[in-house]
Image: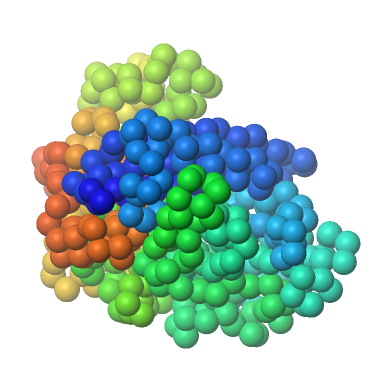
Length: 497
């Protein structure tokens, strides 16, 4: 069948479908944006029906562009925006409310209430997560409390809960499969990542009926078969992973100590810790990297809220650049004698600080400071923040003497200047792959190897190809001075909580 695999990449602002051939090359794609709803300040919602329509449209567009029929596709892999919550009627498949998006902050006060009851330790011990509105559980609890009769209907089994992957599988299979994978389950605040099961105590705390929850499968498993009427032929769904875990897989980070970082609006870094479920003492998240053949591989995860968004601020707020790709070229012209620091806490600071009340600040300006120094400070901020995550990860998990090599993807990695500075600040090699569609590729590999048309883990890791390796070039004294200045800038920026 040519080894064709279809990846559905359902993101926060758009849905994409990408067809890969047996050589893991893109042969067709389709993408469609959908509406962002902001019913109140800090609230973010999506219409599940619009998401569904955008996925179906994208799949058909990708098949058409590839010149293929549904019968040519060996398998489907799905990757999705994590933590976003959908609840729908089991009988009709109709959602009872808009999806509540991972960015939504409406349950902040509920999270604080649970913290005051000294329950965060319980959640962290079982799920590896912190009590934050970011995760799915408190969103689901809010929906059950605020949609009339929802909790009672859920207890009867009349309603289904799911993250976006689960909702799409339900629709694709005509309601025959109510399933998710271990990575998406691990982001819900309801799944015990040690026992690999929904946790009764956490469900009781959140008042979530177990009857609503999907079955949890490995990342590569038989998730169901698409209805023939959708695309003209049945296609098996054989792979599922949340977007950051899918990128980890797409980067072939299969060995303990391997690390990937995705640089988009924000940045998510995952460090593979193997079968060790490392309990972070540095406010990182412990999460499931993937589960294959019943064996769970864990990761430490760090979240940077502002990465590429700082470049957008330079363009749209300060108007010192016309286009994002100009930033590296401008930064290269900065005065090397000026140490200007931007701490981009526009929406607070993420890991390892978790300070939602901190706000952005710039330090070290002189009368000679201009656009070039601002550009360098914005790009270096991403590098310093990544260094903070790497340092925290190494404190939590010793690398057994192995050198850390960071594999990178996302829009920012196209900048050679930024990647070189990243290697310099980290004092570690940075590898940019030839295929930057790593999230979709990871979902496709899960499905393709399960279908037997793509190589196994070892073979896929061998096929991973590097475009450029950036080696550290900065001398240790310069690096130490710059990092010391950064730490001082962060210290001054943190709120007095």
